[in-house]
Amino acid sequence: MPAEILSTSHGQTLVLTLRNPELRNALEPAMYAAGIEALNVAETSADIRSVVITGANGTFCAGGNLQRLLANRQQPPGVQAQSIEGLHNWIETIRAYPKPVIAAVEGAAAGAGFSLALACDLVVAARNAVFTMAYSNVALSPDGGASWSLAHALPRQAAAEILLCGDRISAERLHALGVVNRVAEPGTALDAALALAEQLGARAPNALASIKELLGDAPHASLTQHLDRERDHFVKNLHHINGGEGIAAFLEKRAPRYE
Image (cartoon, rainbow, N blue to C red; front, side, top):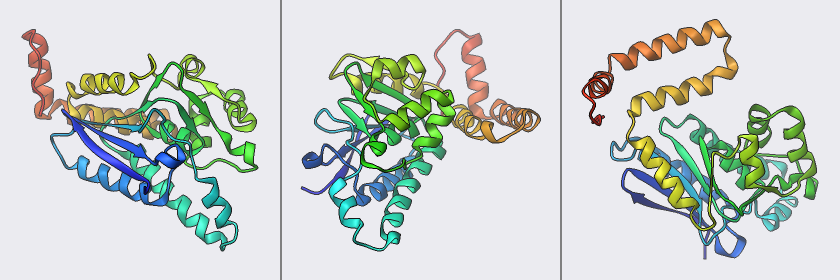
């Protein structure tokens, strides 16, 4: 059975499910392109307010296919480089996506699977989920933005431990470190992620897009530059139709109806 990404809608949330049952949902190049295509389609749909990425059959993602990597050692280096570019295009698409993206993690999130979860805006994990940056265990270095994501999210020593040691890390520890946002009971991570997506779906999409853009820009800007960007986004959102609706609903003590 080929590796694939299944797309289903749950209200205003698009759920993308990684499915590669023979290899615990290990990633394949075809999945990268499918993930990008699904996000591009959802971006243009006003009916979709957020996206959840999860894995089939109780496992998030085992990372890369080691048999394929071994075979690629017999190919020119450009073959593996092209494959990683496909993964990185997907990671960049997620990071720049204007709608919230939530990872719902059950079971293992290993290697590039962990990288994929880190690329999402929010991470919901089952209490018994296990995360590992297994690259150093097989004499490899990270891909999928893992070193970037962890370096931005954690103190250097914590990021170094995760990447250098390749140990299994619990959802509880990552929650304490601030990498996992919500811890759910086993088997309920997707339900918890959908509830979080519903909460976000009740907010103005333009405001959430601005927040995501500001968060993405912040590490690269001086305070003065970032204050200017915050000003511009604030003014734009105040004059958006949703700005008027949000303020009016608050003053009138009713639920807002955002476009």
